[in-house]
Image (cartoon, rainbow over all chains, first blue to last red; front, side, top):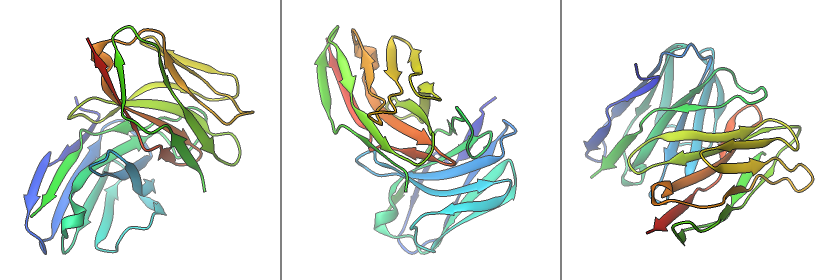
Length: 115
Length: 109
């Protein structure tokens, strides 16, 4: 069983479209994250949710909207896609927000290409 | 805010060479520190971690020591293999996970 799973793995779409990426974790964790990894491998936190509540919303365009229907799911919806949105998006989860040794578990990533 | 700075790559080594990837952090309080590894086409995997000052995390021949006095968590391995070629990320957790920029390591036979 995959602990953190994202779908789709690859997404190619045209500028201006709206798309969603889904994430599910079966680890029973309270906290989930979305990260964006650019072509230089830089990993930037976008959002974090704890028990379905938004905790962090970094400087991300409001075209990006996370939705957490329950603790096990954190979906990412992107409106009006732009070329600069092309990246790999990673979902991750952790047992709780902080606490000694609390590690994050990552999904396999979704490679988004906007053409 | 909290942040992680790690040495820029890429790093290219010959097999059996000694590896050091530097990592320093800025944070309030006492964060937990991590090294993650990303193999091509995959997500990040935890390599090792340390939760308090002077702790040493180790795994697969890699090790890193939590140095509070120098706010550092440098990654070392005594003898790298071709299979260690990957991108390595230093990270901290101080109520959320923050990552360094990543260092690409290539090990040549």
